[in-house]
Image 1 (cartoon, rainbow, N blue to C red):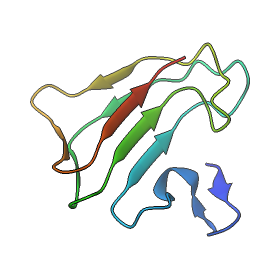
Image 2 (image 1 turned 120 degrees about the vertical axis):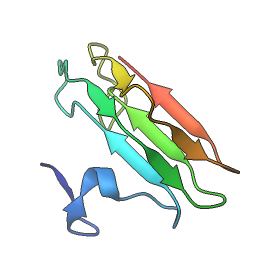
Image 3 (image 1 turned 30 degrees about the vertical axis):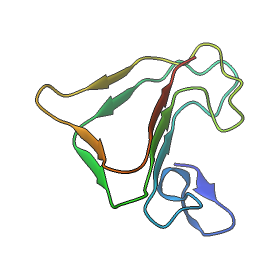
Image 4 (image 1 turned 180 degrees about the vertical axis):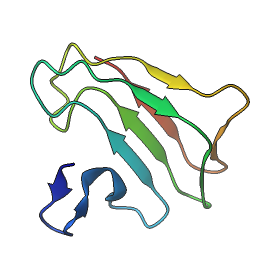
Length: 85
């Protein structure tokens, strides 16, 4: 698991907002990994970002983003952004 050198925690746990969730898959240029989501809830003003394009956003081969049946992404006053390669 890749860690963010600024915080020493896994990259997917670090984001600039206090109420944000960021999940990034495929740090390799030709990565094909996918993301499977369950329930994710963030507090007021928080955002949810899920990407299979890698940290630089340049992976064109990233896999699908899917969600378990019956689960929800909740960002009451924030945004939900999903991006695939």
